[in-house]
Image (cartoon, rainbow, N blue to C red; front, side):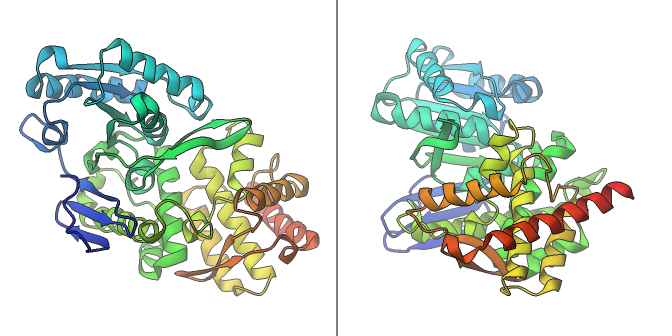
Length: 394
């Protein structure tokens, strides 16, 4: 349950059922890992709901795949008039203030009071929209996340940020609003399309590159993890990859949960990617844009003398072997990538804090705009363009 961490025991503690986080600012929460989250005999979600009034929101695909199970579970554990389930549009273009307001309007129409719970069942976008709505509704109410995608389980599902896009900027509006509970069922990953798995692997590669050489080497040996036919037979490997990624992310977030320090290693892959996403009209998924960003950052590290050629090559090769892009011709232009650098510099308190790999499992910050000369940025982009052209010719 929430608030299980002992007072004063700052940090992240792992047990068989998940992770407890207790931050220096006093915030504590739990992230659970469970099988059969919607099974009638799994009491975990019901314990968190505590018999409160519940308004659940699901994406359309999740509703098609798991909506019947979700409704049966809520019906088995709550009074009939205490819950309702509402599909909401997903997709990055729906991650907006309008969508958050619609969630609030739906909750109000359903009679959700200040003691009630918003339940988000879906990927990161659904969790972000519903979490932000919950942070605003009646000045903040409880919400619970059941994360159904790999990105959701290793990234959105383990942090406290919520947000929506606006003013032509990704995550322009948001709040730090810890979920009352965050539930992750690895079995839900079985129905994900390959593209969604690849996007989740981008976030896992991110953590491996900056923090954990062993995890990186495991991905090099098994770039098809989570994607092989009958992959449940590889449960031990998947459990290692999933739980290691979750733990690393939580350990990095814990000391700086509300980002008072804007220099964050977990922002690797998140300097150029917002512009790659928005300028491309969200043609690339978030994880795909992160992959391009990581490849560009690796080349910048090489050109700046912060990483050797082997490190750069291993990072980019792994991204490619997973099936992720390393270049996008329409957005990876010198002008747009310079715009991305300036936008990050402004957003991060007029310091760049660009994260670049220095070796496998280690990273550093490039803090000032002038540390990346225009010719260096162009050379990095040219290297990726050349690589992409050779790959297309094969």
